[in-house]
Length: 208
Image 1 (spheres, rainbow, N blue to C red):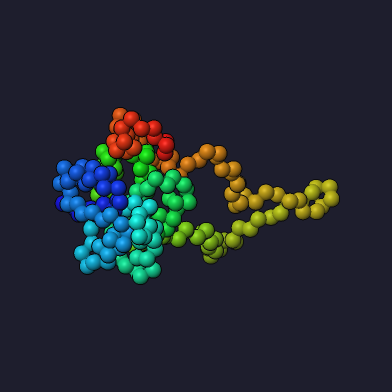
Image 2 (image 1 turned 135 degrees about the vertical axis):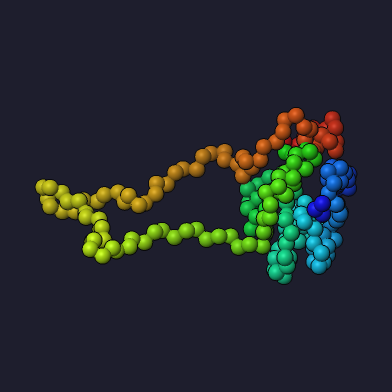
């Protein structure tokens, strides 16, 4: 079975997630600070997947990923696992090689396990692969015997001067929908308790 490294400084939470993973047959290793995680991720034998917290002692999760990238180290599959719920954090995680981002307050241990299973079922995802460039616009090709079509400007029938027309190739700019969230694709199961209730039952969830 795949080996998973859980990088989480809250030991109770790390233990709960580790137990869930081991129940499914995964091999689990733990790191409780960023420095320990970095040392494990520079070894010849890497885990198949890393569940990486951001706010860690000694070195943050983002600092771990930045250092590994700067040293051109090969990365395993990385899921960033954090209480930070800002779009900028999601974008930074993906830029540093993470293949997914989980907000702690929105996911239970069971849902995290489900997401990990989904990632392995999808097959190999290479976090070291470069982001593909956007395809270039097609270039008109001249065909022998046919003239290359060109746009003829419209003219005012009275004045005989060119009339400004809309460029059919220019895409319309759409206003961004207010309230769009970076996490709108993350579906949380309502019948499973959030992480905060698992760890601290009865206490209000300030991250909701």
